[in-house]
Length: 315
Length: 315
Image 1 (tube, rainbow over the protein chains, first blue to last red):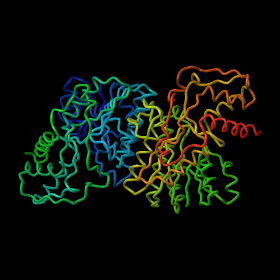
Image 2 (cartoon, rainbow over the protein chains, first blue to last red):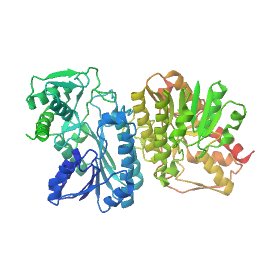
Image 3 (cartoon, each protein chain N blue to C red):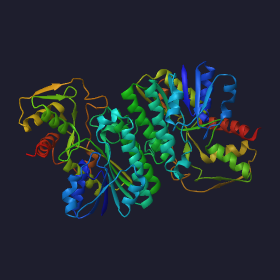
Image 4 (cartoon, chains in turn cyan, green):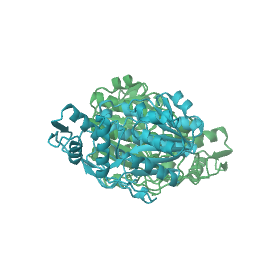
């Protein structure tokens, strides 16, 4: 298999690249390094197991040139920082919707017929059915990131229908693990590095969501890809249980060796205006194919905190 | 009320402008005349009942300037010709998604808090529940027009949540009536004007969909706007019954005085690759507020055919 990974130097992308290379596939990682980091791929590149292309998906000619000769696209590139998208309303339109359009155009031109895509549970908005199944509607996202993921899903199904591109669309919950480029764990560690005595937590700490370890995320995506045979395959990719932000804060404090630091909540149910405070995703559809995550939300967070603390502090 | 109508010189837009002007509201019609026609507004403009601005929604500064001072936006502009969007994959991205982004940005800048939007039943794709309710999912559109409408819905709910814009999203079935700029009735009339002996019909003639007369469409939109009070209000706007293409062809032949013309079907279940051959929309949600269309699909088509034949042939 010749896999073209967008966002290949990013969080999920670097793990995907490593796993596919380990399995003997040809891997090209395409990344503009806006969030990703070349060092996440250094080992693979040195071993000749991955070709890295530093370029932007908004450069339509560049992505089309780079994609030639591949037979699978794994499209992971996005502005994955939802909060940033609220400050600049055009960010997700460009990095999400327009970038995805360019990916699909390149696939059309080169007749590449398989696409794995990282969508998000934020397409559901504030669902009134929890855990939310894939056939929930109407889809009323409350963030620009969510709006963009919904737009991408529609573009993928329209291209798929008209140009014979089979797709596997995964609606992620929170993903955690090494190489994270943003997210609650990294935020807490950075805040504690700046002030070890006090950790500010956005919201009331009761926001509760499912957390999946990035190794499980990559495994789940490839599991569904290998087995689901519809022209469009939409899956939640998550564990059913959740963990709240206050618990994550305490896990980080312990791992940083700062059990007595003060936790200061900013208050309110939401961390920020586009935050969905309670998320629960039904993993039943992917489970019906035989897959389940190897870790609960708590296990995933505990492992990721240990890994990220080691990565960030050099311990 | 000071209403700003995008696509105001178009099919639905010109009827909306006329009705709002008749009710005494201040009306601005904004249109690039790509599909719309200034003559649809000539009467209103001459009577001083409507301000017409010829400009493009892709000109972000122009739309922002023009929108200042209004308190309601009725966003109807789009490439409403689904078939055209299949030939040029970027058409709906630009005329739908990017244009809608510019509309929402202008609303944000000018703090305009109410938006009525024409979405489409094509966001459902090929639904396996018919009549399809508004909470159907997952939404897997098969045309670029459908992908764009889905993208617009997401942008609207994200802007709505973050900037306090209340929205009324109407998922249209087929709309028919005078001032139509495309669609099956107009196609049939133009074909018969070119060759009165033979009418080519795309597909097998059995594609069956609900048809709403444009006067009912405008009435339904304003009815829901006046009564639905959620921050996001999503409604199918359609009648429950359907009419098939073969029946429409026969109605057009009769109205044209060509009952003996040959009807030649191109065959196949779909009219074209992005066509959804069987559509049925549940009107129950808007009906629960007390609204129902004044005409069945057949009555709407019969009236529209008579009106369009008169308009096109000057009879």
